Image 1 (cartoon, rainbow, N blue to C red):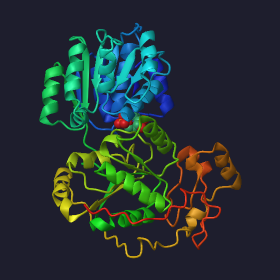
Image 2 (image 1 turned 120 degrees about the vertical axis):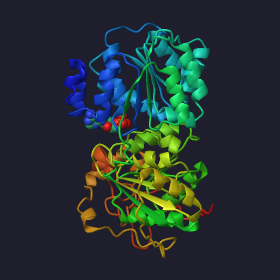
Image 3 (image 1 turned 60 degrees about the horizontal axis):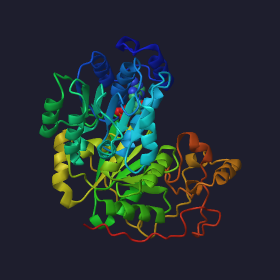
Image 4 (image 1 turned 135 degrees about the vertical axis):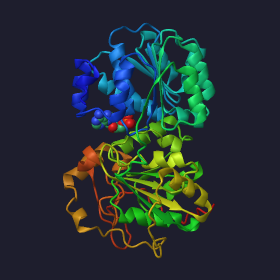
Length: 463
Ligand code: AMP
């Protein structure tokens, strides 16, 4: 099937072609015609399936015919996290670039004044997290009585985050005659109930879960002593071809500890979790997307739905406590036809979670042995690189280019004996700024710009 056959207009087809999409993904092929026929849709799909375009493209088509009025947006997309909302907004800009529609991104942590100004001018689409939307509504800044299309994205995650009462409130504020699209990666009874209540005779569309059909994600399991998890993780990172990775932790406090530890080992790592200031979260995410950070240590909530191209690896530092989260986590790699690798550390205490995952994915995850003798404090010298790495040494002028930009991420350190997956290795367009300066064997980092002189400290992860 082609995009032309889906009933989208020229301006949208042109934008899609510029994205390089040649054909709709299965969820798009199923959802787009239904949305264009004004049907309610319940989509069982998770990120990585192309579901954002599945609802954004037909919404743009529907909205193209009308004009926005001040404070009366015509459509509303609800998203559980700020990052995901920002990503949807980006998609909206990309796909709608020839359609002259306006949007407002209403998320917490950003200036309400700017958001109010946009609303006053009139917007076609609101992309919002539930809390900020209600806040603005209660201040009398928005009227939701002109909403024609409502999208509830990542409904199951909304539930996990306690947003269902907010969603119910918001739905009670939009017209009964609106069209509703609800997307969820899973369909627990609560979401089914919500869908039955808010959607009218919906068309059900679903795509196979990536984890069950994950021929493009290779999975590995490592039995780990809880006190040695940091070292084991590092050893895996060193032996893998890590271009960019998410490292998932179950607890926020562990994120900061692990980031510190990895930085101490001179890895280009940063954390992403809900307790961080919004500005910091946004910057971190932008830097990661731009390839300036190699390892993003994150929580499920923070990473949920983030669309980061070319993620080569996912590391589960902890076994997720719900099997669905495992599916979401590893779905971050092996996207868009690429292959990815997903490693998970497991301790004896986590057996019941592991069993639940293996039951869900109907697979026994192959076990790998990773010994960590000598890799804790006395790591092997990290200045030795495989020969294929040496080929990719940057030119001198690249280093000065990075310098002049003065970004902290440009402070490169040696990437050690990791193959392409070396810490600090930018991806994509930023490759030209790659600076793999060598550390002197005696550990003197003269000529090496890194994260200070912090030496690795033992980080006890025992539970
Ligand atoms: P999503 O599931 O919406 O997060 O999308 C996952 C990724 O697939 C995004 O990077 C999209 O840009 C990309 N994508 C969406 N639709 C298509 C398509 N039809 N062909 C190729 N890539 C796509």
